[in-house]
Image 1 (cartoon, one colour):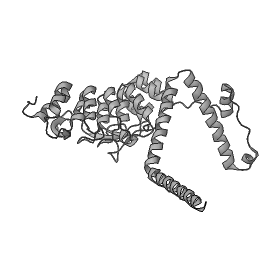
Image 2: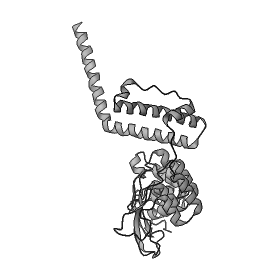
Image 3: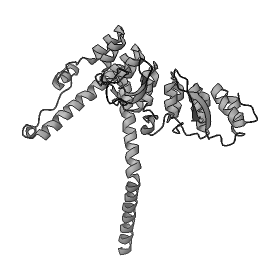
Image 4: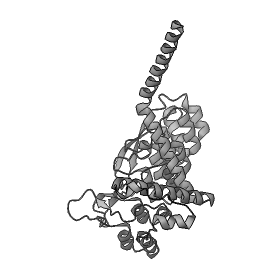
Length: 344
């Protein structure tokens, strides 16, 4: 452990140990406490245990260790949670990698792009959350509105151990790969894609990992866990969707009649059908929310979050123009009133 003769090193070690009192005492004494420190580290799962230099700041260290009180203190002191370490990992990604939900909640960025930012090998916070058995992490990121249809990548060592390949995995494949049945059930309830195949991004020929082109179901069969095979197989089957008319009758919703112009115009018919689907969807969601359905509540949170972010992005892009336009209109109205007063 670093000595108090080097306050910055001692503060970093206190962050690792979760000693908040010592972190607070050393913060003002440490030179440039926002800066990073270089560590000697080895990759997780590396049989050769090759050392490399890892550059991290105090917040990265606290998120890795899972000390949420230290994380909260460091963020209040101004350490940016979007700052990445030398492996390209944000504080949120590190918290997800080590399954620390409380730290992840503190490190959520207001910009959705940062919550989806991959590290240097392509892993995203949501992929790492799916690889864990922490359903809270998946729920947290899902409600924030992250993309659940993409297939981020990660390094996977071949069975022989001779080579590591960069393989893209969809969220469900990641859960299958981790062997977590409760995570698989949860993702299927969120209706993630159950048929997206994995792809090796490193090999041009046959991939030694044996994962190239495997769907989540094929991957489950390769791993040989019958319980997971049964779960994924049930989720992969296409369920017959009832027509919008049948759904409306089931929940007692009256659909508007087809307008005459919709029978002559394809575009008008499509607009009418979309309006009917939206009306039934809203009614179904309302019923599920009234019944306290947890998935419906999460989907509602997700829609609200994405809508809020869309408004913020729109205002950031068009806000100054809109405010300037309002100012011009207000000024023109004031000048017009002044002219009328002069005439009188």
